Length: 320
Image (cartoon, rainbow, N blue to C red):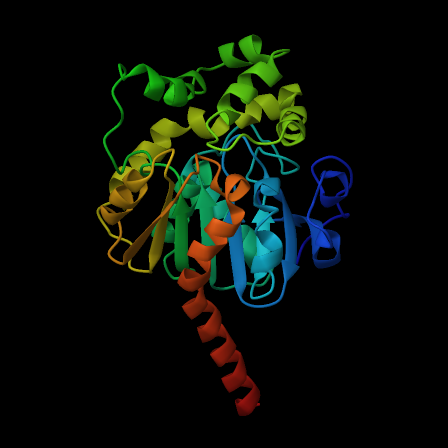
């Protein structure tokens, strides 16, 4: 594995507030050189590899409540996407094909040929691209809380009812070149705080403040819009991807107070083997709002992958 010094301070485990008890005994922050960018990942646990891909405007930290339980059965890799958290923030490369290739480079560097993936929000779209572009690498995929990767479903109309506009307006705003930074700089708490209001269960103020602080500098703010500014490329890529349905098992998860059944409906249009789950009394930020319920959905879905890996290891020992 190609890596550099252990990350320290804000954005790493050492600077993350209110982690579950014993978290640092299991997990460590790492910088991993993928060959194109250096990514930050928090890694720990024992078992077959499980890649967690956060959404916007979060970081690896979004998964903190579910990581300790998952680490009992898996080697958990919670990554900061290109442009986010402690990962490199280049000017370009935010289309989902490139972002998926980043994750292939990450898993190559960590020595994992095949793996399962769980992706939320923008991480849903990246994980879909990962499974579609590299099906030989992804054994199972759980896709959380958007109603389809852009380009696989019709785009929402410009004029929508006010409650929907309140939740989706950022999709257009975040794509604008340059003006965003001028309008948001100095108002990060108001802007990102509004986005976190998509939670059905309000996130703690210190958690929102942690995310806002990580985004309150010019480089991080600029790169946080990268995924949206690359949507033309992603939409074109997804228009091609959807013609070949995903063959591996896929779990679609929606929050009942957010996109709910729309998540499963969208995934069924691009995958052949789909299970769906709706987390009750939960908004957009599923892993933060309802970690136990999310684990209850993920555990049976991931169990065959875990059991198959354990059986393969046992056969390898016998053969040796």
